[in-house]
Length: 424
Figure 1 (cartoon, rainbow, N blue to C red):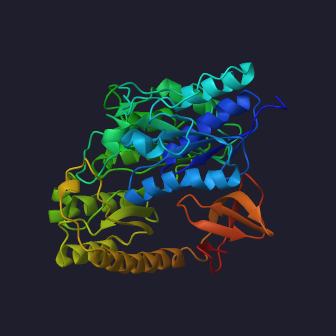
Figure 2: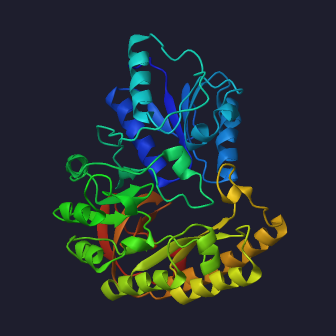
Figure 3: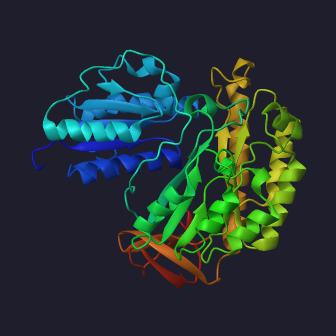
């Protein structure tokens, strides 16, 4: 289809969104269409939006005007969490078609068919400002875009209803993909990629709706030789049984992103997080019994409406106690429709100051963790090269820079010094 219009997908938000984008890219490539990612020149754009914070929704809206600067006549399609949350914020900017969180692959298939036949079925915006969410897992029925590291989505939706979070409202209830479907996808990529990342909106809930479990899934994929990395986890799934299952995976990556949000038990209760700081710390200790050098990373929200100075200080001290390898610091973002969205927010100055302090803690902890890796032999999967320097990651997700490397190749190296945001 040499004369077919070109397509580009702009992705905001989480790894699950990236997986959905990869699935759409695969559909277009299979159809022989010209497809790319990002704000590059194209005739058709799909914006895969995010709504986890107000800032994420704002960036999703801003994509439209940025696209117009690249191609003022472009056809623009919108999908994802921000459009699921608020259809109307995209309906007045000359957007061609809008859907929510469901049906992204179906959209791509229909677009590919329209381009093939020259008969365009998407000629106007949908006129329903609410989108239903399926209670079944939407199997993408195909291999996603092949890269050095392959994201594989095994679960969607969330039942947790944390008081600050929109995700259960825009992604729907938790639903899991069958193990057989997951294995089919792995079988199709196993000869091309060196690492798979098992991910989901709430990965810890995998299997609860289909009489299975995350442990059963790990045992099922333990026969594969590529590296296996897990996405974000909740405290409750960190058990002896789960960690024993990870030990059966030949090349398991000891990187645990264990969501915290606050080191204050009072704030954790008000966030509707179902654990205490002690329970969290016990999970960390258990991980380190099995993987002494594991990278334990986390998310921390600062400036939650009920967070006092003492609560914030508790979070700071707890982060230091755990000795995280990295922290994603999120200034609290009030989301209309959530329980916490009804609360009076703290002043922007307080939230900004706390974010700066926590960012300082983050930098200190990253430095401490990286310093322990200098001089230690490690296996690096090299992914990209720029100006003669190769970039890759270790199993515990340390970013490595090296003048010696090769795309999609794992090599043993010894880091010798700090460099950029990793080690050289």
